[in-house]
Length: 123
Image (tube, rainbow, N blue to C red; front, side, top):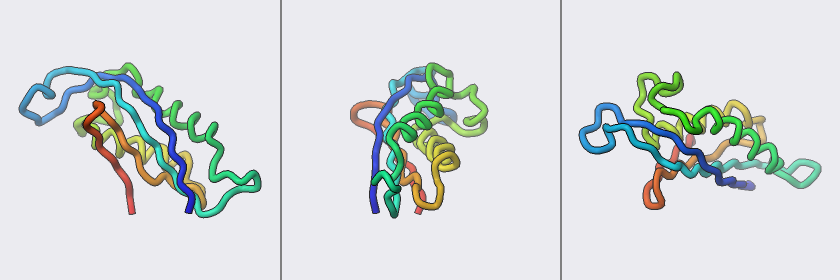
């Protein structure tokens, strides 16, 4: 197996639903996002997936979240836009864009600060 990872970021505001504490109030983060993919085989160029494609697809998806109030987005209707739910959302979306039988989204990690993150993966 091969594993690739790219790291990027986006900034957005949110508040946690059904939470008692400061984070129930509107606030923002500069989220750092780690995207990890795996592949069983390399292509003819010796790549799992071109980093340009991985970065481009990730950037396009994160542009839909960047500088937004996440609670108002359809993708979080009914869900609190926690780091856990953000990581699951990014995983599912990139999974549908990138998985091709060889390349598979392995794990998404979303850092809401330098000291706290949440990851989502499927087995």
